[in-house]
Length: 175
Image (cartoon, rainbow, N blue to C red; front, side, top):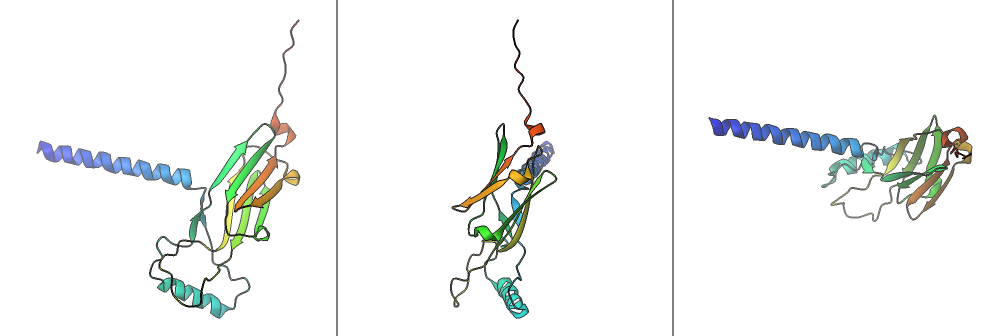
């Protein structure tokens, strides 16, 4: 009976540890996991229906191609925040950036490019369609002075801090 109790206790500890690990993983990645919604811009309804039907019949759709990790960094120095997002496969005109209420909002659309008219996918993990990513900023920024550049699949956004958010160093003078 004692061994059964020990086994039960060990399983409970393992289950708790797994649960904590998943919670931690979700918390750390929740901001980077982004949902892509199918784009219907410029397509006839029959094309959209055909793509949806073909996608549902694909032999290897795991994991879902509607979610993707948009890895990003937020760096801060005394004057600005620098946000870097990895969004390969987009053209700069496919990205829209907005600052609203101390939140950086990045929207975009990754268009589907079919490799060939014959054959089928065996693995399909790339996400396509529209996406929306909100990044809360810890301090107010000057939205009208924000600049952005896109190079080698990396979007860089420089957000100068508002004057009152920068703080001011006060030097102590001696007698």
